[in-house]
Length: 120
Image 1: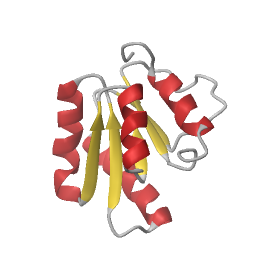
Image 2: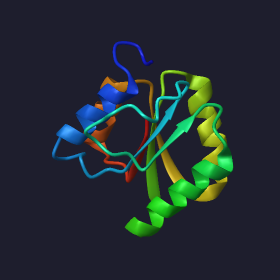
Image 3: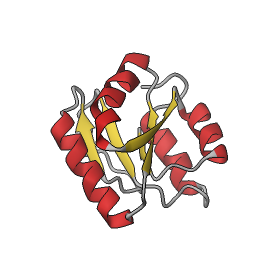
Image 4: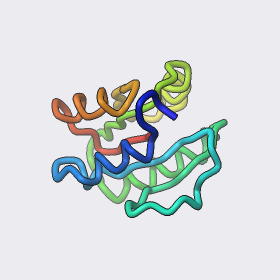
């Protein structure tokens, strides 16, 4: 429900780009649409309000499969308060965080610094 495009459109753009298609994506939405058919797979799907424990468990599972020294997460959400909430959940967990307020900004950020994981 981001202005101009929704998370599924952002996911589609990320997965169609050869530079970003391998970035694991975690969907977080106000809509309970986990059954939406998508040609792209996501690591997990959460409905807001987001449970910190569930998010951390998913991120740790993804991080273990990647084994980077520091895991950078790109948080894409049009609501600043929601990005801040995710920051507060992850600040003490050893993740680097990049912020984007929408799909266009996310693509611009990814062109400069590719994250290890993205939340949409």
